Length: 257
Image (cartoon, rainbow, N blue to C red):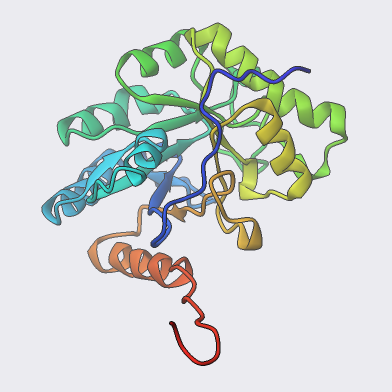
């Protein structure tokens, strides 16, 4: 399948710490939440309020990456995985109230369906194609989460290309523009999967803890839960800064000349 080259190519990250990107999922009642992926609208409001008081602004990942090359500071990436319908009713008003934007990673192969990949439930509805367009129309970035939320590292090549290339083509059909970003389901990525994402034409990719693959196509992110309030969120930020700080420059023996 030929790559769509409408997105800018992935560029090396500028020197300095990796950008801080927060990972959200559903914004709804967190009472029944066996996977710890639900944050209430009130808690999201509290978390964004704390960031804004520190002079930090939440933006989508494409904007965050563009700003990295301009030296613009004070930005935090906000991402919402899976594309739950509660994003429109619960998350979006809170984001707009704080002047924030976000990237919503959706599953075009499951548009209008539910999160059947979560065996413990609860079942949550996913954005329809009209819902995806509404999110984009509200100024949010739409990214791909693959077609069906599958572990890409376990798929044969043809199925992998369907998840990477195929989902990008479907989102271009739905929204009118091809997404710049890809998010690896379950946060898992290997070199073969990363290559497929690159060949599909994505400018960046989001993982969770990509290890040695970390770079513009495997950006590390921080999972946010309902339990994350001031001290916990600050601790997660510090952990990110320590884990992903730039490697020290090693001078040759004898020192610099």
